[in-house]
Length: 416
Image (cartoon, rainbow, N blue to C red; front, side, top):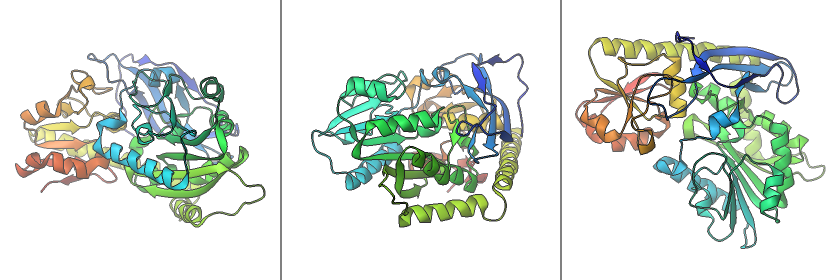
């Protein structure tokens, strides 16, 4: 793994986990990224706060997790990502809302809860029921009758709403929970007896299958398999009654949970199908640990390929910009030790990031219009999950001969 030489780095508040977050078993490290800057998009000088980024697996229960935890407030109180910025994410959240409505019959008296509601985009699809969101960051929501500005817990919910929630969402946030058992227990206390809990998140099998190492970051302290999620759920009286996958953000799992029916341990066809695919990825040709070690080797190869390609292009005198100043993109950039003069600028649609630096680098973030005016020859696409959208938005760039460098799942170049 390539690691940057960092002069006297400023270290964030970090806790080293010596034992598994679930069973207290021994942790085995299979992938190290060294020190990486926290995903802070508010710095115009490179005085970054760093923390070790190291991925482990529990030798007892096979739960994959980070060895080091950055204090959650340092990561989430000042946050930048907004769901409503991307057309792709708005469409994805609309689709999740539609899928929920097909499985849960809601009346005006019912409550819909979104844990980690961000800017409230998902809640906006439920105008005729009471909506509640938990969002500890500085992001303001335009939706939801009650937005609770703290980390989710059952007591805070009860202090705000007397009625249990008929529908609970945890979208792209469950992997950020430091204490999964307490969190799931609080969900169990909050969900109505006939309610449904929907989790969507990047999962371990998708990460391995598509070499999506950009999922690894200080925000994501746990990397779940469906099998491990089902085991945690069962401990708290939940069953996964439906599961499906999609390619959002490099590969995601969507699980539908409910309070389990007494004595009924049967699995639906969708759950069996998802488990079979997962086991084929994680244990198909070798032991589970061997799969993880092989993933680490492949990740290192992808990172070196990207470094060598961009370095070679830079020596030829071409101009390379980043497309999308994202948290996940920050993992890619820092892992490959990309900085000026190899990458000269990052283009992003979020005006709040303009004028600041890409985390861990000297690369300035600018508007897409400013970036296009520089006539870059290549865009290194950090938001590679949005390629279809980008091809349309950057049609002129492609027509004039520009090319995309796509880092994952393999390093490749795309043009017209």
